[in-house]
Image (tube, rainbow, N blue to C red):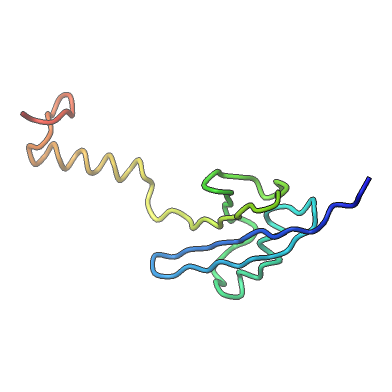
Length: 110
């Protein structure tokens, strides 16, 4: 059998006002977290905690030890500032209080 060759993947991290994309060449069998470490993204964004960081590949959440395939993009996700369920619940309560939603069903008022 022939030996597999190294391949390129991208590691990306984005803030509201800034993003960084780094292309790294990895060996077959490289995991997502290994590619993040190899990219040295923490040099640019020291707030990234490699032990707790959530990762994804093209918007699909992955585990740190998932093996990469050629052409994939590892996305480093920021922690949520607020729980989306709480935000939606507060928005619905506000709509009820303001009379924009039915107090019983939560549906729109005609």
